[in-house]
Length: 211
Image 1 (tube, rainbow, N blue to C red):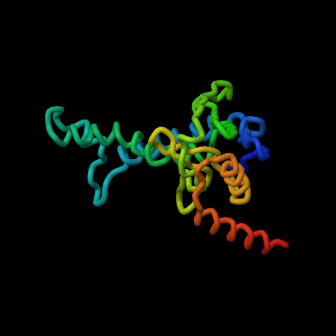
Image 2: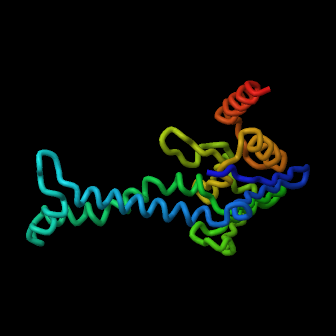
């Protein structure tokens, strides 16, 4: 997974952050989607066609030999249809964070505008934009946006219209600290963040090992 590229501009009047993915990896999400689709198909096929322990028939054999009206048939049908969807549900948040689309966040003392390319738009042209009053937003924090196999990807979260919004996956702790301080100076609700403080300490220690 390539490192995301951020442009961050903070002054006493505004905060601007751009996550630029498409310049260096315009098809990265498409390739990831193809890979995970093939993986789901392989896992589904393995579940269906591989025989069970001690020579038991495969799931597909059971599925094709049982009468349609039986409970066993219905359960097997739900497994066959539901497995790919279940795997997609498990991986969708990590995929969104690990393979993000282009995003921007702009804020002044009155409004915050968050824009992103639709995740399934592989031409990187179809943007979704949401604008909020800064006074109506709450709890800007640095949090994990997705995790898999012990690996977490961090970015910003905030409350808007009663829902948790997630933005800018891949932000490093020092980048998030700069952005959050800028947002706080503009009047945004940025509480003390112990998670970010710990991440900053870990980042400083890690950098110190290579100096």
